[in-house]
Image (cartoon, rainbow, N blue to C red; front, side, top):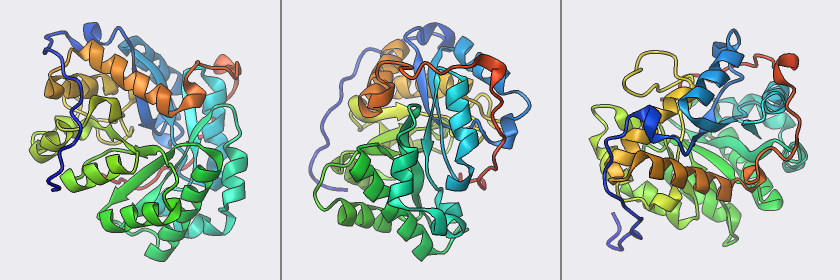
Length: 308
């Protein structure tokens, strides 16, 4: 832990609002996987439930470059669903041959694409060789620098290499993005913030054994936080053990608000504002104007292995 203090984020008085009443300002699920087979049978209902819960937008995340079409189709199908394109570190080895900075930049021109990834390093599962993961990560970083699109970073048991590659590739240039599903320690949080990244908080924050994570997150400035589900994984309490879905981000937002001593509506408004500042393409809503309702069928894609 560095002796330098982190900047203090705003804090407000606690609130006893229920999740439903608390989030009238709307909350954004910054990371979900709606194209996974888990949602194939009830995509429409899943999105509808999220809307009823107070979720104003969702980002479905690319994990295979070769299977980008189903991800883009969801963005085209729903005005409040945005998307990213990229290769999860689990899939780096098999996707590397077709992965280039140019291809990422081309796909990033789609009007509903707001970021690149998820990319990064996973040394816990190591479904792909480390050298392939690192090369894939480098290409995503270069594409982010070239396009200005934020980077969605996955890191597990790979903090040192993750930070090193970000530093090497950016070479002092501004870089933005998210350390998604943040479950790291003080050192990783401080380093990520120092690089200009935001931290996205998942349902893990509600788990009984997550005291250390809660202590770290409590120190992060509010203007650098987002919330997510990583659905279908990591359902928050009170839904733990079930399939996660974007509607459940409400519980994570309320838990985070309580941790920070904020009113849930204020937390929802703050994290949504952070999202729109970071993902500028989504700032003014669906400028693409390409919702087709239920008329465009999104493909099912293929899921990544359980990562948390």
